[in-house]
Picture 1: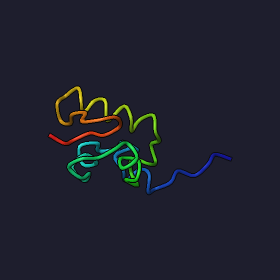
Picture 2: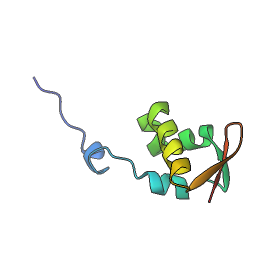
Picture 3: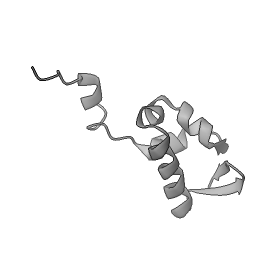
Length: 73
């Protein structure tokens, strides 16, 4: 028997995370652990959260200010 699909997951844009909204919800200076405290980002796990931080830095939406510390721009 096929497993039932969870309706709550389908409501999240087919399981996609709005990483821009996650970034806007973070404090001015944040660490990777604070990104993972966001319930939506936490469902995706460390791998995708760290990749999102890298994209934010690459697109100049955040900058690295210290070891493991980032600042929204």
